[in-house]
Image (cartoon, rainbow, N blue to C red; front, side, top):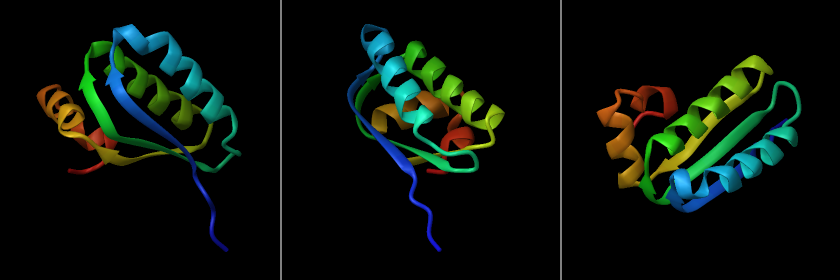
Length: 96
Protein backbone atom coordinates (compact mmCIF):
# COMPACT_ATOMS: atom_id res chain seq x y z
CA UNK A 1 0.00 0.00 0.00
CA UNK A 2 1.47 3.34 -0.96
CA UNK A 3 0.56 6.68 0.49
CA UNK A 4 0.42 9.82 -1.55
CA UNK A 5 1.79 12.99 -0.07
CA UNK A 6 -0.02 16.28 -0.36
CA UNK A 7 2.35 18.47 -2.37
CA UNK A 8 2.73 22.22 -2.66
CA UNK A 9 5.12 23.70 -5.23
CA UNK A 10 6.32 27.21 -4.51
CA UNK A 11 7.72 29.20 -7.41
CA UNK A 12 9.18 32.69 -7.52
CA UNK A 13 9.89 34.64 -4.37
CA UNK A 14 9.60 33.12 -0.90
CA UNK A 15 9.83 36.55 0.72
CA UNK A 16 8.00 39.06 2.88
CA UNK A 17 6.23 40.35 -0.23
CA UNK A 18 4.38 37.04 -0.61
CA UNK A 19 4.30 35.91 3.03
CA UNK A 20 0.55 36.31 3.56
CA UNK A 21 -0.30 34.60 0.27
CA UNK A 22 2.09 31.71 0.90
CA UNK A 23 0.99 31.32 4.53
CA UNK A 24 -2.59 30.82 3.32
CA UNK A 25 -1.45 28.32 0.67
CA UNK A 26 0.56 26.38 3.25
CA UNK A 27 -2.33 26.40 5.72
CA UNK A 28 -4.77 25.17 3.07
CA UNK A 29 -2.44 22.43 1.87
CA UNK A 30 -1.62 21.27 5.39
CA UNK A 31 -5.34 21.01 6.16
CA UNK A 32 -5.64 18.40 3.40
CA UNK A 33 -3.03 16.10 4.94
CA UNK A 34 -4.56 13.26 6.95
CA UNK A 35 -3.20 12.40 10.39
CA UNK A 36 0.02 10.47 9.98
CA UNK A 37 0.31 11.65 6.38
CA UNK A 38 3.06 13.48 4.58
CA UNK A 39 3.21 17.06 3.37
CA UNK A 40 5.71 17.67 0.60
CA UNK A 41 7.12 21.07 -0.34
CA UNK A 42 8.76 21.53 -3.69
CA UNK A 43 11.04 24.55 -3.41
CA UNK A 44 12.98 23.92 -6.61
CA UNK A 45 11.30 26.90 -8.31
CA UNK A 46 12.08 29.46 -5.59
CA UNK A 47 14.12 32.34 -6.99
CA UNK A 48 14.63 34.37 -3.80
CA UNK A 49 14.18 33.70 -0.10
CA UNK A 50 14.39 35.94 2.96
CA UNK A 51 13.74 35.58 6.70
CA UNK A 52 9.97 35.63 6.16
CA UNK A 53 10.38 32.58 3.92
CA UNK A 54 12.44 30.87 6.60
CA UNK A 55 9.72 31.65 9.15
CA UNK A 56 7.12 30.05 6.88
CA UNK A 57 9.22 26.89 6.57
CA UNK A 58 9.76 26.71 10.32
CA UNK A 59 6.02 27.23 10.90
CA UNK A 60 5.24 24.42 8.45
CA UNK A 61 7.73 22.15 10.25
CA UNK A 62 6.23 23.00 13.63
CA UNK A 63 2.69 22.45 12.38
CA UNK A 64 3.45 19.04 10.89
CA UNK A 65 5.41 17.96 13.97
CA UNK A 66 2.63 19.01 16.34
CA UNK A 67 -0.07 17.28 14.31
CA UNK A 68 1.74 13.97 13.78
CA UNK A 69 2.36 14.60 10.10
CA UNK A 70 5.61 14.50 8.15
CA UNK A 71 7.17 17.40 6.25
CA UNK A 72 9.35 16.54 3.27
CA UNK A 73 11.15 18.98 1.01
CA UNK A 74 11.14 17.51 -2.49
CA UNK A 75 13.50 20.01 -4.05
CA UNK A 76 15.45 23.10 -3.14
CA UNK A 77 16.69 25.79 -5.48
CA UNK A 78 20.12 27.38 -5.14
CA UNK A 79 18.46 30.41 -3.48
CA UNK A 80 16.85 28.19 -0.83
CA UNK A 81 20.07 26.21 -0.30
CA UNK A 82 22.09 29.38 0.22
CA UNK A 83 19.77 30.74 2.92
CA UNK A 84 19.35 27.41 4.72
CA UNK A 85 23.10 26.74 4.73
CA UNK A 86 23.87 30.27 5.93
CA UNK A 87 21.44 29.86 8.83
CA UNK A 88 22.58 26.26 9.48
CA UNK A 89 19.05 24.97 8.87
CA UNK A 90 19.78 22.81 5.81
CA UNK A 91 19.53 19.52 7.72
CA UNK A 92 16.08 20.50 9.00
CA UNK A 93 14.69 20.69 5.47
CA UNK A 94 16.24 17.77 3.59
CA UNK A 95 19.82 16.91 2.86
CA UNK A 96 21.50 18.63 -0.10
